[in-house]
Length: 137
Image (cartoon, rainbow, N blue to C red; front, side):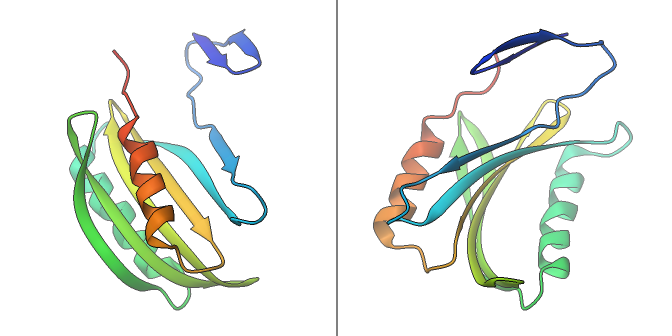
């Protein structure tokens, strides 16, 4: 399997799976980051059930979890879940927006994180960034 990343590419054994994480940091003055992660959806599980289960796990496993907003948005023509919430991390309260999209047999998660509340302009920038997403051909 060919695997491409910004700095080059590798030939990997066919039975290996891409479960990488990409981390993008804003300027220190903005103080937030975007993490893109991937989880393989088990073959015997319906992708929508897996997505629902993952949303439930977020709510159940983050200390002092408080949901602020849940909405359906579209990425590359497919419905996705926008989940905005706060929770208590070891370093203090964290604000996160998590957008989940099923791509084949993977659940791709786009997570924006900040120790401060997100401004409307930050949320709009995140939404604009997500709207530039195009899935695999």
